[in-house]
Image 1 (cartoon, rainbow, N blue to C red):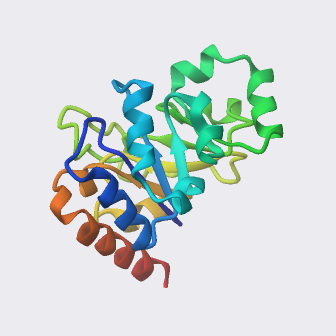
Image 2: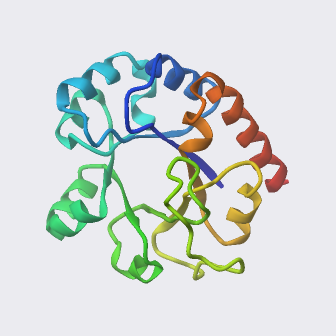
Length: 201
C-alpha cells in the first residue's frame, strides 16, 4: 500500500529542505498543491528541491511547467477534470504522463479512465481542516477490482492507517499528520512508514 504526502497549501518555513528530507526518508510520491500560488512561486520552490526527486513529484497547478522539471505526474481537481476534454487527457497519457484526480462520490469511479489513481475522501475526519468531516460508515468497503486505483484522503494518521487497507484502498495520502507540525515532519513520516510496514506483515 502506497503512502503519499500532500504539500501544505500555504508557505512553510524551510519547506524545500523538509521535502528533500522526506524523499531521503523513503517517500515515493509527493503531491505539490499550492492553489493560491503563481508560477514564479512554484518554480522557486521546485528549484530548491533536489533534481533527483522531480520524477516523484505530482503537480496540481501550472501543468505547463512540468516538462521544465522532468515531472511526468499531473493531478486534476474535480473541476479541472470535468472541464478538460477527454481527448486531451488521453493525449497526456500517450505522452507518458501519470494522471491523478479527486472524487467525493464513490459512484464516480466508473467514469475515471484514463486516470491512473484518484483521491477519495474524507475517509476520516480531517486533521488539517476541522470542518471537513467524514460521512462514511465504520464498515465502509471500496468496490473490488476498480479500474482506477483509489487513495484514501482525509484524517489519515497512525491510529487509523490499518483501517485504510481493510477498507480496500490502494494507498493513503497524508497532509495534516506531516504539516501541522513541520518541525516533526520527518519523525511523523517515519512513524507512518513503521505503522504501514507493521500492518503489511
